Length: 636
Image 1 (cartoon, rainbow, N blue to C red):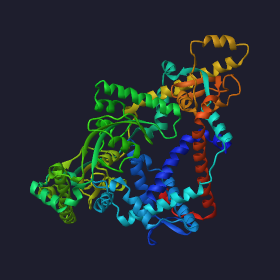
Image 2 (image 1 turned 90 degrees about the vertical axis):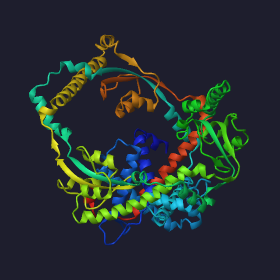
Image 3 (image 1 turned 135 degrees about the horizontal axis):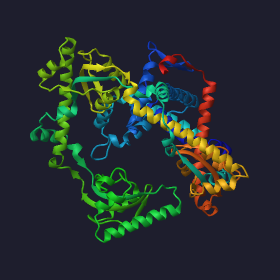
Image 4 (image 1 turned 180 degrees about the horizontal axis):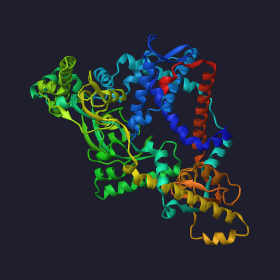
């Protein structure tokens, strides 16, 4: 197994990235419930259909998830055959895994589902208990229903159980783990000579023909995207709720009618400073964090502000920006060591360092309130806001009903807005990505707007996410996609020619120097001539070497595989130019750290082995169960 890991080491980053995508798709999207025999079918898995609608929903959800993680990525960049193939691949995997689980008798009971749903914090009320109304509202806001959500959750849990059963025997021997440790912790020093491309740019004098040829070869880079200008009317709960007035009396009536929901057990409120330390971290890592937290504790004892130190040092991604402030919590809500330490404090007192599964904490008790009912004054504003949103939601439905009738009758948007007492808005010229970002529309809705003739409007309201609303829009004007003429982009094309030619000259220079370095007769003289440019890196592990080599995997692999200290047989292109390199020193993994880190490497190796076993299961299922793609055109 160790050799397998070594052979594939260069692709670990890619594998990890795809592993995350697999988890997101398989465990987040599940199978769905959209198959309809009358609908177009994209693929069959063992005779079971994956419908076009199910595939399209998974594709749209995946784009949404990826853009939340990477806001700079446009939907168009993800709208590729490769991405669509990946989506379909995960839908196929889900079908295969659920089929295998059914044959093994793996299932999830209703009691298990209820326990899982009840434990999800997003469905809890102010008293930290499961609230059916919050549950239904949360699903509705995400365009889901309890039936659909629970079916999807059940599939997710079945697959997780299957994975657990499949990988339960994944073990890694100590010699194998040590081999992995030695490979991963080995470092190298590298000698290199860089020939910066920018040093050669002054030698490049682009001719008109070179510029014209470069423009013809790369003019797709100089596209001016299609743009449209819109007249639009957003109908959102947030906008409408600002116009809804809720009196204190109405809020009090609602409070009195739902008094039980405002009751709470005994609660504490605290601030904390957290230094993250994984449970499996080596002792020296935990001790270093403990020393840091004690230093912070010493600053507090000298009068430093807990809030300012939390903002500066705390590694809690949620509370750090708020000075370490945590919401009110009751018994059982926090992990036991944290809760016990907090309960032992007096208001205003700061704890000694506390170790939990998350790391080292300093805890300051801010408040302590006995069981009781939250006073109306404390929840009045929040209650008024919620009631305003409920009324706004009803109002938005009424507005949409009226608008739909008027749109169907051909009434212009400005007239509709006037009748509703709402001001219509006008946009600047925008491309598809700008429209999508501004309104939170799906690609199909954006395509609808761009396909409109000037002066016409969308026939239906367009759903806006995550604004919880709809968009009524008319296209005022549009400009088609076009390729900018050479005279408009000449400077960019000239720069492209100079960059390419400079890199070519840098490569030629590097090849000449390398030949002289490899020639015994000229080696010493050449080395003396480049002495000022010769650099040696500090010790680099494989991850650091990626950065040092400008992300050139071939150069990285060659350095770690080098059997001697001769110059590598070829120059390598990196972002700054062209480099020659050789191994200067190979440094073995430190033997004294092995005993301290042994458990971690055995555990991590076993996890990697578990993933291999699970991938093998999938591969076997694909071989034994027929998978047929019948609509390849939908993946293009």
